[in-house]
Image 1 (cartoon, rainbow, N blue to C red):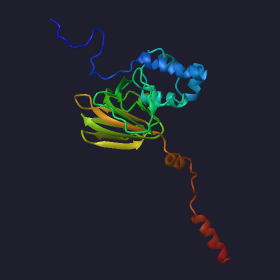
Image 2 (cartoon, helix red, strand yellow):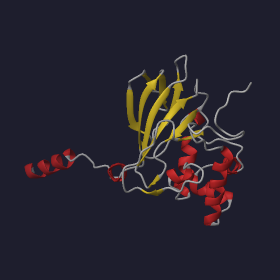
Image 3 (cartoon, rainbow, N blue to C red):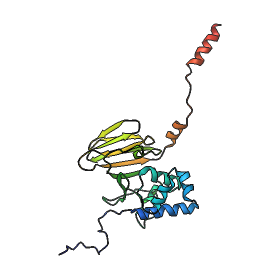
Image 4 (cartoon, rainbow, N blue to C red):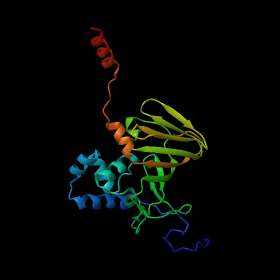
Length: 235
């Protein structure tokens, strides 16, 4: 005898987290690209994501990692919350407190992460908070490292992870540990505990302060100028 679940066949239980499937995500990408009147090649040029990757993502054949969907979002001027909003939900301008109830974030299964995006009903946020389950168990090559402008914060809820940087540095984090870093540095998460680790992650765009610091001209030491001036006064 089949137990009664209170739902109709083919429907999701009310307490199940909304999931953004690859097909729906791909349709949103294609719609956004067509809005600009761009070809796949033009979007690839503007985003730095390959034509093949964009094409497969639009057809729902490929799950994108954070670096790629962030790059596409920037090129398409597409708010992250509009990209990952639940089906039928149109994000509104961020003008007050935004509550996401337990288990009600929008779930998207990426390449090495399962993301539960939080606060997706508010557009224009400076930060993108997620609850992430780290599926990766190893680093297979340079393509595993994500890079995107801004800063990133990670707090381990359960399990243990290693955060690998393309500089060669590896940081081990256990439950309750946290890490804050410049996300333009290549980085990759790996679960090293028996169970897959779960984290809270927050990413932000590049702040004006960060951009100014990056673009500021490198000032030459003034010692030499002082030394020359001193030499002239002696003569």
